Image (cartoon, rainbow, N blue to C red; front, side, top):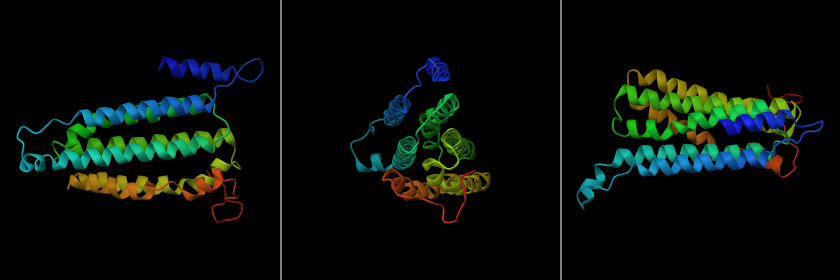
Length: 224
């Protein structure tokens, strides 16, 4: 946190007589944190007490939730990487939004460990879903901050195209949380469904990286 504050202060000092912080530094910091979170996830595994496939089968839900969390983190990393690549500028607001995004991701090991032991119980499922939803919201907020600093006509604004995927994700996970009050496993199902939208990087982002002209399909439409 102190590091982020120091970066923010130094960035605000950029411009006249100052030197702005490179977005490469922000990206490297986030990459390192996500890698650590992924490592902590796998450390939760305990070797089966018996050398049998039956003992391994008893851990099937643990493997399932681990894979779901790992894929989620991988997708966040992938899209975060592309998002910063197409952004030309960052500022203090972006740095703090990025820190909020990392904060949400840091809860993954805890919620993953809890829900894989109680897959059909409401409290662990709802908690897991809320953390995922907060991570989605913080990522969208980070993207909006990048659009604001780079401009509504920037490549990042055109590539994000009104944040359609984020809005659909909010609806899917939100519906899963509502259903999870009555059917807890619906939360995990909704999260798995939402990942389908993000499994592959957005083609508009990749086309922007290659210097192609990208639009949302509606002339004059801007990301909001």
